[in-house]
Length: 244
Image (cartoon, rainbow, N blue to C red):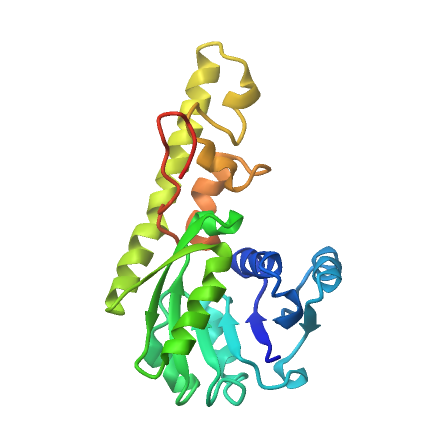
């Protein structure tokens, strides 16, 4: 069966890898990340994932997902030009990297731009997708299946709307977590025990901050734009304190 190449397994790439493994696609997955931590490498190998350091080691795949930082895309994408040709689907989650730029590096490729949101890191996100005309119906279905590994998906009919998603995502979650941090500090300042009020659980009704139980809201609020370009999406708070 044709493979799925994941280029980069950092914050969002790692979330995608975990999601794909959870969807029983581990044996089809090939991760290319020279900086992969040994602990993560052992975990992925145990799940049947193939690990590679360069694209030279890989046969032609069914899909390539680029999950590297935007500034790395010009040099990284060109390494996959041969693999990305023909029937191979290319998915890019690099913020600000247009399909035109991707086409310049990957001639005649079927390209889908994807913009996941922060809750995708725990499989509860929403990913906005835009496809070029070269993308077939079966490739759209494949892109949707792959990105559903981290939550729901929506399709956009204009590429510029991806930029709108990115603009909201770059600041929205940071403000949410800044509010959580402020409420937690306020609770402690009026005598409440630091326990849940000073932890990532934050103030009552903000369970969405369990995106990263080991990281404080202040860290998430300052790093959100670089961690995962996002729209707050499904991470809305219900009166009961549960999240959608």
